[in-house]
Image (spheres, rainbow, N blue to C red):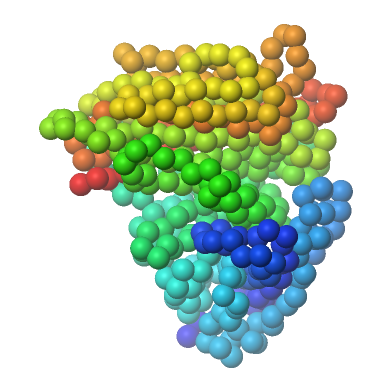
Amino acid sequence: MKKLAKGLTLTTLALSMLIPINAYGSAKPKLKKQIIVISDSAETTISNIKKRDSDETIKKIKEMYNFDKITLSTLKQNNFTIKHSEDSIIVVSFENISSNKDLLNNIINEINKQNLVYIYGKGFTTQDVEQLTGLKIEKRSKEKLEESSVKNQEWQYLGVGKEVDGKFNFDFGQVTYKEADGTYIIPDDSFILQSVINSNKRLELKNEKNKLAPTGYGDDPIVTRDSLSKDGYAFNELKANLSVDWFLHKASDNDAEYDYFYLEDSVELNGYNGYTTGYDLKTWHSLPSASDIIKDWGPDSNSGSTFAVSLPWGVQWQFSTNAAISLTTEGSQADDKVFWNVDERWYQYGISLPLRIRPGTAWASKGTYAMINTQHYGAVRKNGGFDLVELSIDPQVRYDYN
């Protein structure tokens, strides 16, 4: 049996929430949630989080969590079996499951038992996690991927949740830190863990909103979906978050040559700790395969606080912002791409946050592999100043329907 690296500790964080829900389950009033953190430096990581009292998001975490410890000897005595309550969330470093097969096997077992697990580290790809765990996170078409020239993105955390029907939900996260000279780096584990906790809280709120106002378009199924998030830190505080929740729907059709899909792309920009003024939010959709054809997109350019999306096959939805904005749309069927932009105009200083938009694109896919590139960029401004924290997420949406 391989041993864990010296100093590895297992730390338990107990959480009491007012209206909590399981990230992939149903609402349960006054639920106490346990977050188990496994890393080489759990004590230092938790201590560094506690020290950042000026961060408003840390204050909320400290109000909601009690930090308790489980010793490493307890973990060893149970053959690296992780004992926890029914509604626990397990957070484990990629480095530790890479170096300890017994711990890895128990983590895989926890996932298969439908427990929510977050893997975190300085940087790893979905392929790294697939090779290590045997999970199938992405399906890939060699033919279309050769066309797209997509580079593998690195993540600082990945949440994995298994549903009753055996399907998996994933929560992808990136974390960056802006230094005093303006360069961006990957921060230490305490910032990454802070982002994991905040991401899980955001997922709970989003799932609660989705339960109250479900999205439906007739019989069109959601064939795949994902949540992605990027946090931007500066001056030891969380300053900005860019979150993306996308839903890929398959439309009904009788076309023998093409299959029809549409992407519902929910994008939200938020600011914290004195950086609560929005500066810019951009979204791009494009088809990387020459054999696919873009059909339509929405919304069109408009100003106001309510926007309508109208796509082929009777697909329609609306979204609202918390204040009036000016949204510019540029699209080309010839080039198979579309661009949406929300920025501050000459007559205003900043954009009200949080800002959420929900554009959509419909296309015809040839073959048995649907693929669309997306890019998202958001920037928040220091209140009363000009310093920006900038974030970007560029996922490729893929679905093998063979």
